[in-house]
Structures are given as C-alpha cells and as structure tokens.
Amino acid sequence: MTTPVFRFAPSPNGYLHLGHALSALINFEMARATGGRFLLRIEDIDATRCRPQYEDAIYEDLAWLGLTWEQPVRRQSAHLKDYRAALARLDAFVYPSFETRGEIARLVTKRERDAPWPRDPDGAPLYPGDARALSAAERRRRMAAGEPYALRLDTAAAVARTGSLTWSETGCGDETRLVTARPEIWGDVVLARKETPTSYHLSVVIDDACQGVTHVVRGRDLFDATSVHRLLQALFALPAPTYHHHRLILDADGKKLSKSTRATALRALREDGASAADIRRMVGLA
Picture (spheres, rainbow, N blue to C red):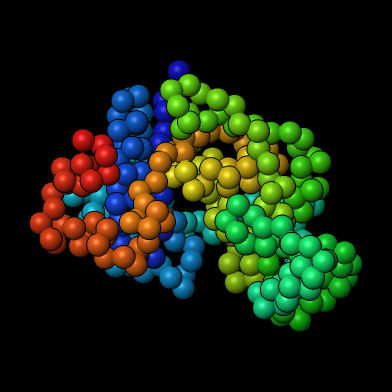
C-alpha cells in the first residue's frame, strides 16, 4: 500500500498568517492520521519578492506551531533545470507571446467595445492576442532580438490531445467526489517567461510528481487552478494526486488574508503573547 504524502508549500515573500497556519496544520494532521509523510516545500521562483528572512521565518513559525517535516526541504530555486526540461517536453503545445501587460490591457479594451471580454476565475482577462498565429520564423526572430516574452500553453490544443479530465476531491463534504476539469476557463495560461523558466502552474505539477505527493491539501481559492494542473499532469503522463481544498480564513471584510496585514501574521501574534494553542483556536481547529 502506498504511503500517503502531504506537503505544505509556502512562498517566502512575506510572513505567514493565520490562513497559512490553517493549511499547514491540516496537512500535518492529515499526514499523522493516515500514517503518512509531511513535506515542506519553499516556492521561491519569484526572485523579485522572495527574501531569505521570510524563508527563515517560515521555519521558525512552523516549528513554533509544533510541526516537524522531512529534510531536506525542496526549494524551487534550486530546481530550475527541472522546469526547463519539463517545458521542453511541451514544445508542441507552447508558444511565445510578446505583448506587454499594457498592450494586453489595450487589446482587452478594444475587444470589449462590442461585448465583455471573458475573465479567468481570478478575474484577469483571458489572453486576447494572436501570438499563436505568428510563424515559427517570426517567433525565432523576435526571441533572438531579445524581446520580452511569455510562454503560453495552447490550451485548446492541449485539451484536444488529452480529452476530458477529472480529479478526486475530498474537500467538499464527507465523501470523495469526482470533479470535471475545465482548463479552458483559464485561456492560454503563462507557463514561463523569458526571465523565469517556470510559473506556479508548471512548477507545482513538477514538484508534486518529483516528491511523490499523493494528497494536495490547499485553500479553496486554488480549486479552479486544479483544472490547469490536471491538464499538465495528463500532458506529462503524471499520476494525479487526490485533492482537498479546505475553507479559507477571511478578514473582517470577507476577503482572503494578506501577508501585508500585521494583525493576522503569526510572528506578530506570537510577539503579542499568543500561544500555538491560541492559533489553533483562532483557525477553528480546537
């Protein structure tokens, strides 16, 4: 029988807050209840925002909560070659787009003169450009000239290859249910950029497979992103974990917590005298 493997994968771009505590504790306790393994992964591909002091704080805060994890900790920045190799395998389904964010915004405005332009589940407009139509020679010329670009997944072509996909979801009640993936609602997502050989979508799929993760337990805000992850798993012929999307800790306005809010940061709460038991009560686990 396969040993269950769970992971908690924060980004060191700020201090952990109560929402992170909930996710980490749920993963840790599910691993313990099933006799499984608990891994910690540092998702630090965003070199402009991630800081060593935040990574150190992650270790301190989790240890203060009473969590232990296997060593060594996987850090994404140490595995960029893995993501480059994976991306190369998707060459038939990936194309470069050269529009800036400002140009994309103008394209959306132009298209919305007639009707609203579709948005993804996060509210961002789907890619409105026509870079898929560029010739291979034009793509090579522009890339060789040093133009900034984003490497996008041709979602329609990828779905045509994989067909319909599903995943097992345990986070919506007592029973496991089968969810139909809908990657098309994201449009042609970015898988990498000129300056960064990966994205969240690509790296999380490769990392989970490399680490043998069997159960992905994360916040409900990432439920829809699972459709993209299932599509990538199918393209790479990787096994699909079981998913569990848990409730979120929201602020007084009903919004997802931010790392910039001191009042919910674990370090600030600890400095103000809170105990690990207090944190468990605050996130509804005690």
